Image (cartoon, rainbow, N blue to C red; front, side, top):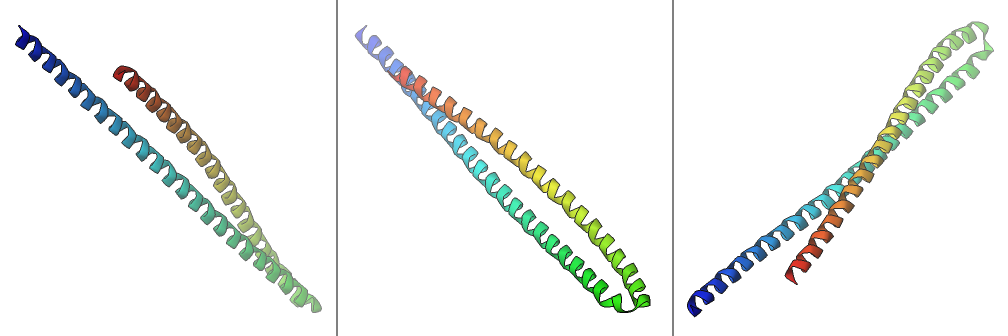
Length: 152
């Protein structure tokens, strides 16, 4: 009878060790998932930041180019005012350049607006990911408390 009780206690200890291994495995898996989530969040933030910087640089470069075009058109108009025929020709040409530059500026404005919208969307996505991360951390803490409670 004593041996049978001892064997039953040993089986009980073995089941408890197995449950502890399973809990530890679950803790490790949860911690790995949390770390992967944090890494993904960091990568997405870095990518969004790089994309935003690139879009701003591109837009600024395009705006500078458009300003140079406008300045060139203005200079052309001023130089051609000496002669009426040349002035008329220059005005026609400059008007086309201005219209082209205006269209280019409108296009840049639309691209800028799109970039701003994408930035807002990215911010919303990052906020959502942050909430998910906080929820995961809370669940992890809750699980840890439950495990401590079970261990006690």
